[in-house]
Amino acid sequence: MSAGRPRGLALPTADDLRALWRDGSVERSVGILLAVVALGVMSLAVGMLAVPYGWYVVAAAALLVLLGATTIERAAVPILAMPGLVVIQRVGGFISVSDAVLFGAFFFALLFGVRPYSTTMRSLLWLSVIYQVATLFTVVVNPYTANTVEWFHAWLSVGGALVMGWAVGRSGRARFGLSLFMLACVGIAVLTCAAALIKFAQGDFGPVYLEWPIAMHKNLIGCLLGFAAVLAYARPYWVGWPRHAALAAFWICSLAVLASQARQALLGLVVGVLFLTLRKDPDRKRSKLILAGLLPAMVFVAGMVRDQLAEENQFNSAYQRLEWYGQALEVWQKNIWVGVGLRWWETGEHGYVFQPPNAEIEQLSATGIVGLVGFVILFGGAIIVLWGMESRFANVAIAVLLTRLVQGQFDLFWSAIVVSVPFVLIGVAVGAHAYAEEQRGRRPVEPAVEPVERGAP
Image (cartoon, rainbow, N blue to C red; front, side, top):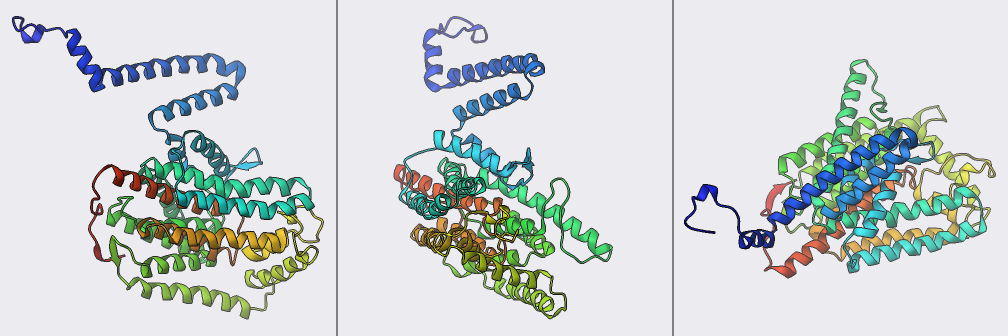
């Protein structure tokens, strides 16, 4: 640049432009400009074609936008899909929004996610394969549509959820993805608590069912928010949530679980918190005072069950579960080795139309002894594999898995989002661990983001 010209009138030379390009400033500016132009052209095209071609054009445009987002962040779709996992409403009466979101996010994670998978991730995926092979026998022996569809759905709920969660954690965006999920859960918790206060003010002390903005059964509310409460209580340092925000989320979600009166969710929450309190955490020491707060929850659940068993009403939920256990075992006797098929209660061929409210009994009746062995290998093996991972990442994953297993002892197990959500969260933790390992290899090991907190919950 010539020194004789006034600085305010100076024009960039070729050397100046080359320096800017090497710095990336011009490249980023051109990229943003092209993205804006492309978005404008696409918006114009959608406006012109939407009338004659309807939603097909809108869907195609949305797909292009998502593909474009992956050029900026490879895990953009799985990250943005995290809050969509809580929406249980069905699309066209066939598939739930949560399943559709998981299905789409899985394929984007499979195509654009960071690989290779870590040893822990590969082990978890192999465990899911073992379970799918074990349950394939019942699909072959009992050929009907619901059986086959549910086999693929179970694979998506476990293996697909792990891959989606891995993409979020491995991208280094675990905090953003989990924050989106937590915000959605806190929103549901606030609505649940508000609905409970309204019911209590009217003298109704029964469980809460949400109708707006989405309809949610009390058991779904309880189980979902149980996961959120455990996640908030764990508050792993690699998520970086402020302590006061995590505590607020924990208590609002816990109160919502209590308001739902979903007993299995309360028990699952107690077990998850108990595990996190007793398991060593390298980043904080948790106060054992929280254990005193778990006792009233256990007494509350025990009291509800005792009162129902003492009633003369043989059709309350406690007696109904006992009856269903016996009837499901009766169905299992028809084929003790491979069962009568997944979702057998929808066929109308076995005299009963209920889904067994217990994980192992459902597994036996649907997939027999072979399927139950696969189930034990999947979940028992997952706990063993996760236990061998660094505890600051493993603790929350194991706690969520234990929470789900406890819930499934007293309620439907293979149902909706209550299986996929914990496996997505496990995938995030495993991916975050792999990301942290990679970062440590690039620089000297640094201390934890936050110091050890004594007495922290």
